[in-house]
Image 1 (tube, rainbow, N blue to C red):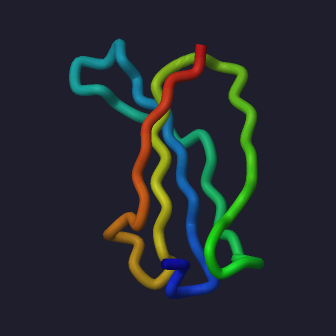
Image 2 (cartoon, one colour; image 1 turned 120 degrees about the vertical axis):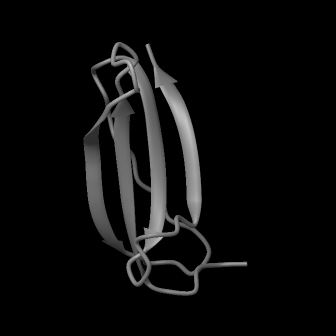
Length: 74
């Protein structure tokens, strides 16, 4: 299918499980210019364990993510 735009924003934030309402803090926030039409590849390293959520947006619409995923780091 591919991307419709050539610039995306990748955000990763960590959820705080100890907070009563699951607060969060940003762990990674990057605006990326795409080199390929069908995929984007990068990596991040987290040294702190916990529950993380990743969102990807088109830069023209930061209200609606085009991808959303969560993962755990031990």
